[in-house]
Image (cartoon, rainbow, N blue to C red; front, side, top):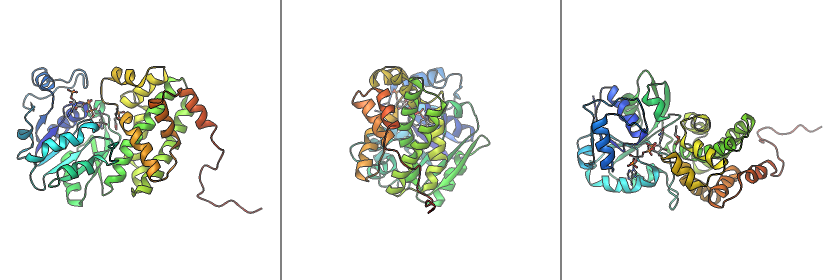
Length: 338
Ligand SMILES: NC(=O)C1=CN([C@@H]2O[C@H](COP(=O)(O)OP(=O)(O)OC[C@H]3O[C@@H](n4cnc5c(N)ncnc54)[C@H](OP(=O)(O)O)[C@@H]3O)[C@@H](O)[C@H]2O)C=CC1
Ligand SMILES: O=C(CO)COP(=O)(O)O
């Protein structure tokens, strides 16, 4: 049995707290919000985010960060990506040398273009930082539906230790040394999921969605491989796997926000309506900057950026994608000389 501290009591933090508790670990959860701590401690259910999922009486919720960090075998960081750096900075004084922090959030910092693990390593240099990613909606993990994810870490030892801690008969965990590829896949898929939602909101069909998913992963992999990620991370659970679930699922916040935008809502109104974090909105600008920095064409991401931040009509964005210069799908094989 391990002692685990969870930082963040939103849907993902709570679902993972329950999973680790069921695996026999002792779990304490920190939230920045007094109201959230009070609600979870008394109601023993996250009614708005994980309705119907009971929280055990002996799972502690608190705003006391030090108490949740000190003496824990590992920590799980599950706050929205715009708050990863600030939360890590507040955690730093309490984190022991070599203490493991598993980041489970998905995003890229717009100003520095750093992944979340890079930000945490910068803020808490004494920590052993790992990541968990893959197709895993909290609503389904909370209900114990079969799910597969990947743990990425600097060392095989940490990855395999965490694999053992998280894995059970409905939660299958693979390991990977490619933290960069995993994190790029996890954050960039949210931008494509916004596009898929927009297409749904416009009333487009399955053909459109399949094209967005397929050309979207081509974009993500092109950039990710150029940045040093492994192609297998983009063709695996943390790439195409997470992209499929986010573009297709009724649970996806990014797809839902995109849907509302496709129906005519402004970006801000759509985010307010979703009520939970819509990470793709934050990752879009960072993705555009990464495309420029690494000189990689990102046509779908570029159009999402214009729809979100330049009030471009989504129909016009789709038209432009359809009418780009004609080209070959790929150049993996040479043409035959006739
Ligand atoms: N939900 C999911 O299915 C999955 C989510 N993820 C990722 O996990 C991360 C968290 O998502 P999720 O749990 O859904 O988000 P939620 O919106 O459900 O919850 C976020 C939590 O962070 C808290 N919070 C708000 N502001 C701050 C702050 N300034 N500092 C620290 N904490 C703050 C929120 O408190 P309050 O409620 O008071 O605002 C809430 O407890 C995201 O990066 C997401 O992409 C990854 C896989 C699955
Ligand atoms: O990353 C996720 C599932 O793997 C969650 O996606 P959303 O944030 O769009 O709900």
